[in-house]
Amino acid sequence: MKNKNQFWLGLAVAASMIGGASSALAVEGKIGEMTGDAYIVNRDGIHRAKTGMACGDGDMVMTREGSQLDLLLNGRAGCRLLPSTSVAMASAQGEDVKLLIADGNIVLNVKPIAAGSQFTVDTPTAVAAVRGTQFWG
Figure 1: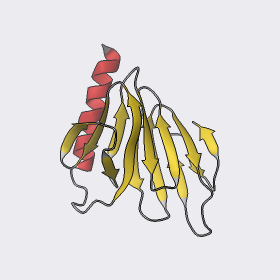
Figure 2: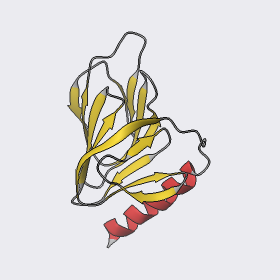
Figure 3: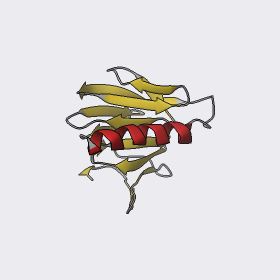
Figure 4: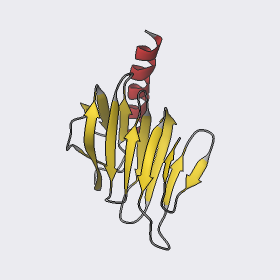
């Protein structure tokens, strides 16, 4: 029960934070394969994630316990959200990608990026700048 309540509280907080985001979101992410329940939270509300669904700057993608989801980012990376994970797409435009990991674990496969481009992952305890690699965190 505690995990369920934390999940819904997380959705509510994310919705309130994203509510003020710009109405012109760039669509740079896409939901790939998934199992179980996952959600996208954006300025339009809370949506059950489905394969092929687009997401963009300011959107938060969340998986529930026992679920996982593949997020394809800008043709530059693949990100697998493991169970009970919350990831906000702070920026996914052009060559630059920035993810904010609020909770949980992800597995990333990042293609080598061009000089001057950035791929960063922010967590509550660390920031990783990636040039092209696979990692879990």
